[in-house]
Length: 298
Image (cartoon, rainbow, N blue to C red; front, top):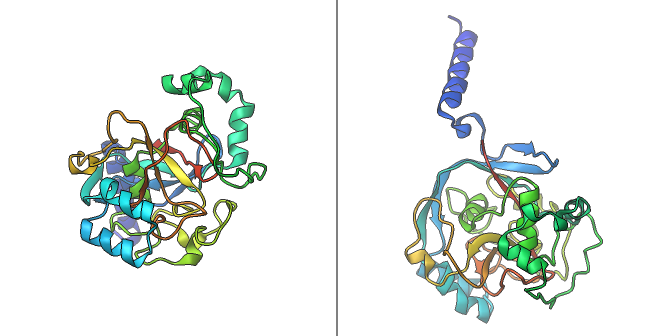
């Protein structure tokens, strides 16, 4: 049998094993792209393990070397430590960029606010006016189609994701897509590079996907800067001390939701992939919070 024939046999066996085992990771490489049913580009994240969070000594060093704001330096030890092993047992797809104003406008135009099947019970209460949100930061980019959709509550982000046929990522899914198996400090590596993210010295959002050099290991963009992003998890002080290794989803209940990724008005400490913002309840919205969608691989 010639070399080419042998290669074809090996390729066929590999595909066959992937089909029999249901392992999409054997057939799809990390960072592969697809267009979902809405035409949105997503990148593939294979199941795997990483070190989530930050150990205390490293966090102390980051606080000093990255000139952490006092409010962030005080909160980070409560929510970001200890570093711990996390394994995600399912392959998934995550949006390559944050959801844009144009994409969210399609949801609204399709009657997304009027269709209860997309809304959680808490989201329905928000729709009925039982929750009130405030707007402390400007939403001056809402008329720019290619900018991230900001000034959006967790409930709206959750409903949009359901309309798209997906959901919001868990914090672990988001952080793994940003950091990868090597548990990088930033999506692109361990050293801060100002030109890789829309953070320092900015006053508003930018179009999504502009910072190609800031891509994560799977090619996800803007995971540091532009807008922070809602994730599924409730915020819980000390949760990492007892969280499960496999597929953690955060505390069962809470008052505030976790947000990841830093925003246009933050700094390199807040832009780290392990950083978790700690201030906002699910009915809150303002100009520095957006989101992206994940879909489990079939």
